[in-house]
Length: 165
Length: 315
Image (cartoon, rainbow over all chains, first blue to last red; front, top):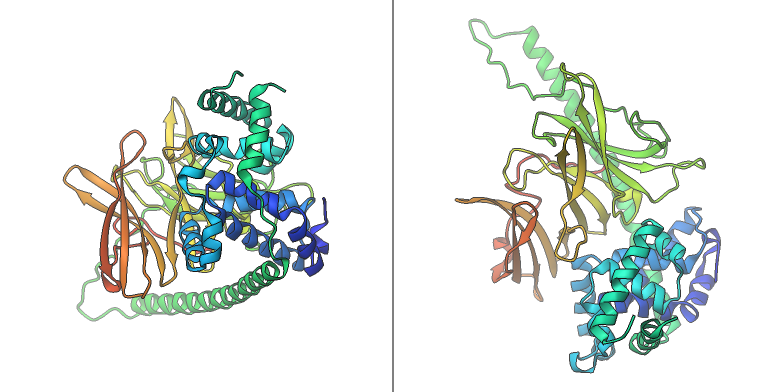
């Protein structure tokens, strides 16, 4: 899905929410280990996209832009504390938001041990299906850096999961 | 596709557990955030105008007072020269008033825009200037790439300079990315460059860069955390969640402290302070948990770190 940001309005946001939204929230949640933080960051990114479109600014792909901005936003420690606090206040969301430690899959535990950049690259590659070019563009680093990052992440995940490379 | 690739795809799909949102509720949430951002933007514009007007008035009043004093010395009195603020022997890079104006800088291979500048002793050799620039494109000031740069004296007289450049910076939005302060967080006499890279309604996030000499050249590097990523610190917040940073001088040297505090009633706060020791890198000590009243929260805004702090309107 690719949409010109200058045309983003309420219907475009609604279309995004019923389309790409769940997977992008899930991707950010995999990186951060917190669905509350992911939902907060993606909602904030959407508000910024909407605001930018009203100022006449453009962007090539709304999902890619939202992914990049949400991954950046979710890094803020303060944002994380606030989002998780709000989620706890809403009991229903609180139950859905955080997976109990003993119910987490091995892959989640292994992912959580990776440095942030490796987690981001791994989730973008293996969950969202991005190629190296798209990952580099999303994370704002060179393709060579992404290749190295993915190589290290893959090796670490294989070791942690007991898989052959 | 090998075993590990297949397994990562399969297991991440299971672990992700994507959940369809309630589009109506989520749309209201996004709409509310958009409205709040618009309000904040308007408030910032009003505040910016007020600051500029007040600054102009204050500067005018100060100039008038100084000139009046010079023309009418007190009879029989002696004048005490005010301490002069050391300034570099070289000129700063001129930055256009309009942040979207694209301009060239000697030492950079690309045009830039959205420049901000602060003076400090970033090389440990005397005053110089540090900058943040957004990389421009042929289409104008429309990229998300930003860099940090410091002017390095390059001749014996110290009047010519080259640029040390670092980055790209991890800016959330180039419009809110600027050089913020020149603290000396480890007390070694060499200022660090504090760069704001994200601004919320009430929270400012910043990173710290330091200049390091390698042979005859200088590099600008961020302070890195245990995860290999640049450390990011928060300042500000709301009555229920606050954060700040400050320096304290211990017998064994200066310490840099980042804290955050949460409260349910706005009067009593659970405070977590993390103390960093800068020794060939950034070393965090174990966080300390305490409780404090609202008027007993730790210092903030890089208190005790030296240097000055500026807001976007003055950078």
